[in-house]
Image 1 (tube, helix red, strand yellow):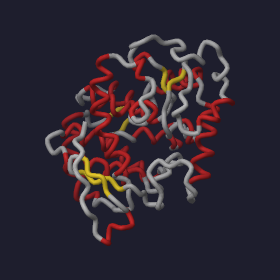
Image 2: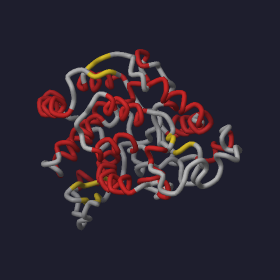
Image 3: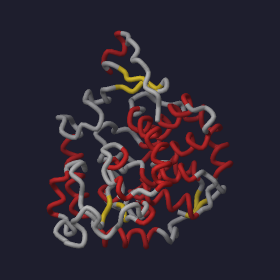
Image 4: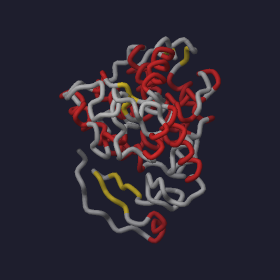
Length: 298
């Protein structure tokens, strides 16, 4: 876990972000670019209605059977072949409707996250690259990758095959989900068992699981913790609310420590400040070459 430092005083220039919370040298703003607290799903903003409608559709349509079908479909990796940086550039076309904190193209968020981690963890180059690629699965929104609806690509993730936890954002909409009243799925454990491990749990389909499949099946040499971060960084009920811990095995618990580190940068680095892409590109290209083949199947 990150060490918590004493908050430092902020200048008038920074007053719009209010107090900053320092974590291992990383200062996390308490206010997002819309003037609200981060991940405040009830705040009145220009994004609020879009975000809530997104979660209504997600909670109704993400079922165990739907996720099973999508995993089988996309495990084939038969859409196209391209390199990691090519995929990063495709994200210039993507905005995430589930995110109340950001309305910028996704490539800027990836670089903001990666650069913030790089500053505080200069020796963990695998973590820098993990930050850069963690959201690449959002290309599922584009026509060449199936043009999936937003509710099937982005947003917080959660397990299917067991009860929906109360900590899940806008959980009231699960009452319209076909799995909600299925006796096989609506108990604490459902079809799972204590310590079964997240590899054996069906998680709602989206960009996390897709990018995990792409990385793993293309033979990345990133460490297991990196794959865990990619696959579960949107699983906020677990890593932020502490729900579903009963499903973790020993290896999951170890990797969760790194996910806790990563999450603070993923969430709090979102801003309107732009990264000079051409300036940082050579560094990230060197990491891509180190940990991935030149071309990947998607």
